[in-house]
Length: 351
Image (cartoon, rainbow, N blue to C red):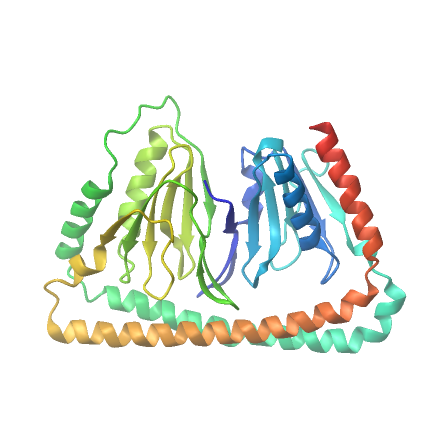
């Protein structure tokens, strides 16, 4: 249902990773964990494999980097039962049983170390500058997250429960199927707080509900929807909320082409949404004027904090780009190309 997602997110709690869950994904029979530092070709290798797989007619699900959405941190080719992942920090992945369905591919051996030694002071300085930017970025996100939670306290609990109940009835899609065993669940992020801004990735083709939810009050009804469908035997994708990483932002049913996504007003909405539910209007109706004015001011401040966080992430990426520029002349890209071609030949010849 989705062709791209994030498995990591910049959040008020710092960086949150779902990369390790690839080892529990039932679609994946073989996991290759790429190791190697900046600029050694990990993303390029995965982009090449994804394009080659699509030439053969196989779907490729791309995992974007939340610190550089133009770069790949993972690739899943479900029809081959294959996944590749960048297993380096901050999303370290190690095989549960090395050689038993998961193994390493070391692109760090493509560095010409004699060319890097004179650059060690410059590399260390760029890495320190990059790391320093994340403190202010996450500070802004913590403040934004605290504001969002505080704003919800303005809502009447009775009103919230009534609106949630009515919305759940409207969002339920007819009679649930009767499954023999519960469906699978996997977690991704479709929204990201990135150096390029606040992004929302497409949820794929299908019947998609967009739920306008600046209060962040819709996660309970989505949790209920997800559990009902899972218990009915439906495989479910949970899109988590980068502003509250333990809260559900969306529920997707890939086998049915059906989904529900909460939309924060600071983030772009899903382009393919066919149906809309304005949860904000229902919750704000009847709110005292003083509370409504305070909520608007709080939301404006939250947006400013999110923009400030994006600015610090953009500064971090500038320093990361410098690190890659320092490393790139020391990479034996002919060796990287050979590794890529050997892997393509192995994967696609076998299949």
